[in-house]
Length: 292
Image (spheres, rainbow, N blue to C red):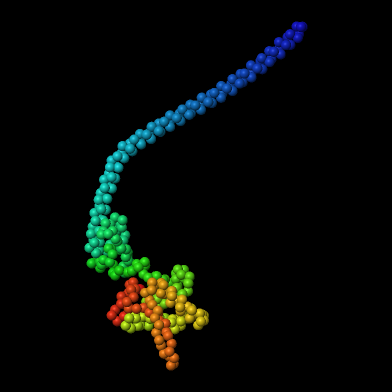
């Protein structure tokens, strides 16, 4: 091998080693830079950790202070609860005694589940003042507070309940025309402000009655445009409805009549003097009084 070739090879190797050395130095510099960044990040994290640990320590100290303070608070709350329960028991006992003496107590002042009365029976009522009260069943208030007792809606007969509704509510409550006519018929009897009243005063055992003929004409006045034939059918259906809705407090009676020399049988819808109608009282003359 010639001297020139040897020198060339040596130079090439030298350049190669120099390049590799430069690459290694660059790699070392990059690693050192990356390591410095990681050291800085670790330092930041350690700082944050110390701050978090301090915050946790402060929270734990605060929690311990609250736990130490909670014990007397709970003790005071327990004492207040016992006092309230004792007061509630005393009030309940006093209310029970007053109820047993005949008192009527405002509903909003009574805890129904906490009152211990005979047989555990309390009656909810509404009075003339519009307020709701509790009392023992059928007991009168000796102080006469709130006025007379008004019947609860549930105490009324179905026909009475329907008769209290206005036209729109009546249509929404019942979809059958005979039931609506029955409600209007009852209202005409019980409410003097209605005006168109086909009922007549009876005598002896009959308090009031309406004849089938009068009822037919009354129905035609209530339902304009219906034929006489359809009105006749509605008479029977309306009578059936009012008998059902009054729980048969009313009755059908037939009476022989004579007109123009001819004898015929007339049907009457009759309310007897002995009929038990909630909210109505019957006097000796057979006339009714009170709300229905």
